[in-house]
Structures are given as structure tokens and as C-alpha cells.
Length: 200
Image 1 (cartoon, rainbow, N blue to C red):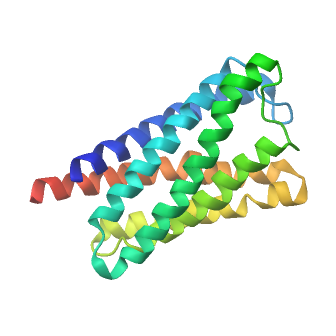
Image 2: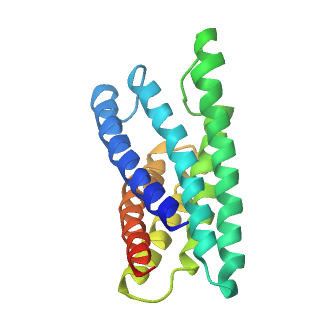
């Protein structure tokens, strides 16, 4: 459990760094109002798939190390992370396969695939992170993780104002949560699992 937690947290940090770099390249090429296109979009989608899988593994490891009194919160975090992973993996698998062969790939607002994607990353991920934050109690490192998860989760949920209002500029709030804050918190979680391994 400790080894899986450490490597999944470190992997999520690495994927997050790669995603921010690719996202920056895409935004520089397309601007803030135009959709990002292939091949940059395809790379982002593959990174998103990997991120969802690794996030699910990480939350499962967190659930395994959670004290019995707080298991309900880590279980809820795991449930919402499972919903997030299932939704976003479905969207991007369809995007990377069928829709590209049909010549209609690309996430643009408003569309049903994009709405599902935002449900996954804004609502499901946000709730998962907030519930996960509750289980980190103890030393200064755990307090930092708790604060970071609450911040990332709150930013994700705040990003729902974008699709609700039809102004996707508000979606950048959620992007800050899952693409900037979450990778940093993942690195802290990796440090926590490493400390646990050394004490064992």
C-alpha cells in the first residue's frame, strides 16, 4: 500500500507537470478563445487518461491507510474518484478512437462530451478531493495536504460556474485546481507515503 501510494502520487505529480507544459504550448498556439487542436490535443487526452487512472489508484491507497474512524470519508473520496475516472476515460477513449475516425474529434463548448468532461473534473473530482482532505490529520505535512486538497477541490467545484453561465473563462478556476494545485499536493502525498515506508 505504501509503495503504491508513493509511486502513484509521484506519477500524478509528473503527469501534472507534463500536462501544464503541453497545455501552455496549446494555449500559446490557439489562444484563449479557440480550441486546442491535434497533435497537442491528442497528447493532452492521453495525459488525461493516465491522470485519471493514477488518481484512482492514489485514492485507493489513501483509503487503505485511513484510520477506521475516517474510512467513510476516504470511501466517499474513492467513489467520486471512480465516477470521475469512468466519465473522463469514456470521453477520451471515444475522442481518441471513434470520433477521430469520423473526423469530428475535439472538445468544444457547448457539447455533450465536453459537459461530461466538466462533470468529471469539476464536480466528481472536486468532491473526491474535499472528502479525501478530511482523512489527513496529524503532523504539519498532513495539515498541508489537507489544506491543499481542500483548495484544489474547491477550485474544481467553483469551475462549474463556467458551463452553468456559458462563459468558459470561469473554467480556468477549475484548471488551476486540478492542473496546478493538485500536482503540488500529490508531491506532498508522495512525501507522506515515503515517510510511512521509512517508519515501517
